[in-house]
Length: 206
Image (cartoon, rainbow, N blue to C red):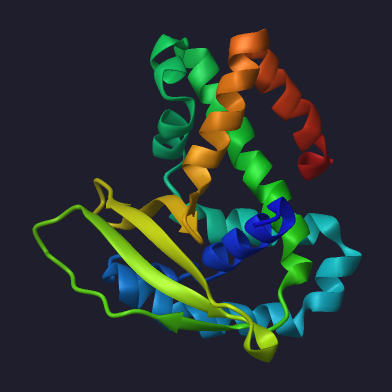
């Protein structure tokens, strides 16, 4: 799968995670299913305004979508052993820059969405489990191949479900970044990676 399509399909996964606070403690599949239509309607109604104002687009992703992600957990998985070797300051800086990276990436990919349908697979919840996987598929226009994507969620201390990985067509978001970042850290160190991300993320805050 081309990288652009990988980003785009991950965006679709993000889009289905928007919820109001009343839905925060819903089961993972209900949380995703019940809020999809609300967000997609908002995107359709405000597409031109979002295209004209990139900061509004960034805020949409940052304020509405990303609160449903556990960025500390994701950062731990992405950095692997380098997380354990990092100082507390480095860990905090990486979490901040990794979040900004996803804001920038998915805000840019937002305009690729063109009303594809999302099909939800049967889900069985175990109330005793704190980890869940919700499986869905994106239906492509013209009868193209379906794109499966799976959400991995973890229940936090507030009893809310948070996403810590998204697997699209067999490709894990966490694994994808872990592989590329490990090479960069081995070559130039963690501080260099953080600085590089910060430079690229400046457009999010400008």
